[in-house]
Length: 103
Length: 216
Image (cartoon, rainbow over all chains, first blue to last red; front, side, top):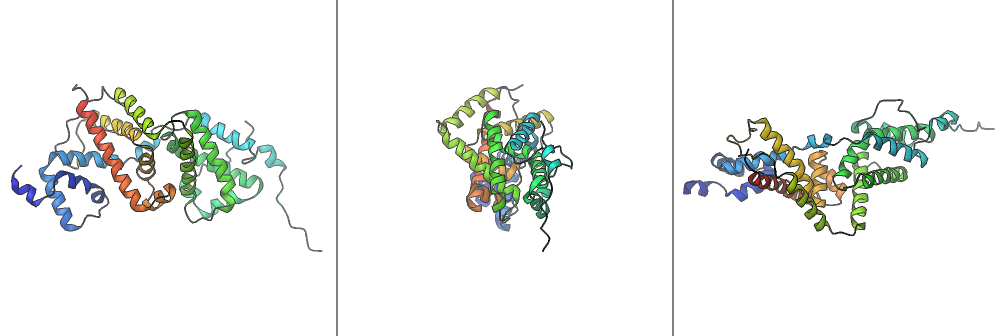
């Protein structure tokens, strides 16, 4: 890499520090230009940015390990025992509170 | 199990966060109980996913999940609705996880080191990835892409506890900076700093594993 490149652009470490703001679209214009100039000439930072974006786009990991079915059953059973979710029998016997009619 | 059957569809986070659903949860008797059961059905997967990334044993995860729902039930009457209901529940889960971790007779450092050690052996055979040629573009090779995603999953587990929680809330669960800050009890600026640090740790962990894996 020639000397002029480093004079105009940022060093790799600085570019990596700016990646959060780059993804957040909050880099000031001049910074953004120097950021892109660096990326155009630096394969290591392009690779770094690729992985950084992959790391930031992690919603797919939400479904990576769905909860085992018995977890829901155990939780609902536990909450029923605690009187939080109640049972079908309770529901059948239940009547909503009604206000006493005024005398 | 003689519990209530799901008579209505399973609600998503958007429905659970609506004022109408909150009103149903606060209703007395079976209507409130039924709404609570539906809320559990609609949220347990996501909350468990969050808990599972912080605690190793399934039994412990289930206990914490149940403790969280107990705390939700106890706290619901006082829930002021200043934040989303699900954000509040994440915050309860965060506190329960912290309590568990604090109770353990091991330091966070030791935990992370153990994780690192086990992950190093698991990923030793991962495909070597030589980087990309065009920035902003995914590598052509599907196997390389899958290897990257697999390694990112492992790298998340290798993050220190606190950073992992911030990362999970923000980048996995898709919460805003403000919501994440509320759950974690830190400032949005702190979230930003920790999230950036966590992403960088993930990138560097993945790069390290790729550089060390044998070429296929």
